[in-house]
Image (cartoon, rainbow over all chains, first blue to last red; front, top):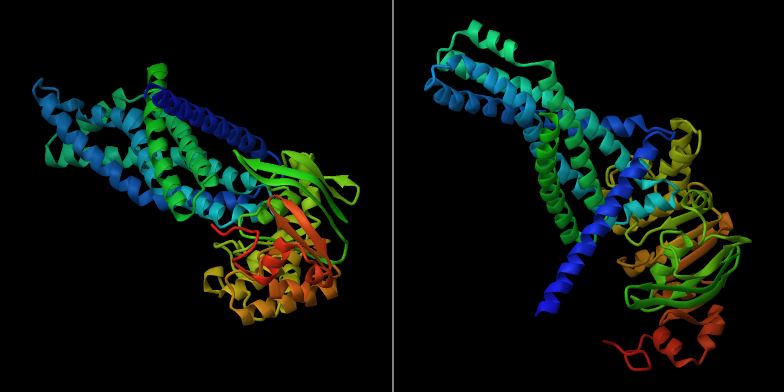
Length: 257
Length: 248
């Protein structure tokens, strides 16, 4: 009984070390190939469109409702201390430092990360990745590099959109619904929010973009076991991607406070 | 010429290749036969560098390829073409995109010249007017033909075929065998095929090699193999359930 348990634990640890190593190797290869010519701009733009443009709707929806609910909740709390004028800065700071990058990361991981893992997983199990290798085309350079670059470039842009629509959503609720003076709302927001707050959020979003695309590429690239394996790859990429976003968010926040 | 010497490969505890020795002649059609799961695909994946052996060597002319670095192997791969079992066409590209892909990656040809070559290769495999179709719109036989057009688009010295007739009806199988013979006669390319389709093998092979339990147990011309009394070979060629090969 004890031996079985230890064996299982050992195998899990071995798998963890193995996959972490492979992922690190993939990242190192991608970093190297990203700067080696020929650089396939067309592939990069295609992935930027997929990760960025096609995620706009979902981040606008998430950002605006989050800003609105933040305004509503913070108004109820701050009213007790007569500090309703701080609703604007509360919404803006929460969005810029935390919720903008984290929600964008989680939503895009769910949408684009799962799709990436599915696409690459399907390519793996139908031997399309092997076909690339036989045609002397490096699959990490051709498939992984454009996805990681798209993540690093588009996540900050999506985060700016989320932050902006969140602040607008908060303004609509705070000013139009709850009756806070618009001048006070905007003035206090400008007083409290520093450039550093926005930079902190954008730095996080770059890391989240890397995590999402690397994890999705890794799981898709090494998918095995037919359609079931592809499904497993998509699920694993979303679960691991989301967990890593939350953990790295905490770690970065503790260093950036 | 390709020379495979004492090639061994295991996956975990499972020994798949257990000392394969085989010579593949230049400009000829060599067919490797054997039961499903005997390691035929593993063997050709070693030739393409998709897998690296635990032991043994593969020589391409005088070049030992199994110990090559990945970047150097890519230069060797440009001398090869490969047709996969399911054709492995890129879902997101049209037929023209698929066939022209190696040209786009490795030559300086412009789009106009690429489409000319693509049309010529598609015509060679019996397909006309399919350039703009997507792989999902093609039948199994058409996919194999497009896969073959892609495999020969760079005029390679060697083409590998992984189960080219699997999943096809007998008429389509026969048409693929004609295609293999026609293209090989015209291009004088070295063809290496793996299959367990015996009528197909008899029709096209210059040389047959049988892989069994990780080793090449018999090899020779079609006539030599037909006359070979080895009971394992006989059972396989005649497709009998009774014999030394146990069916599980």
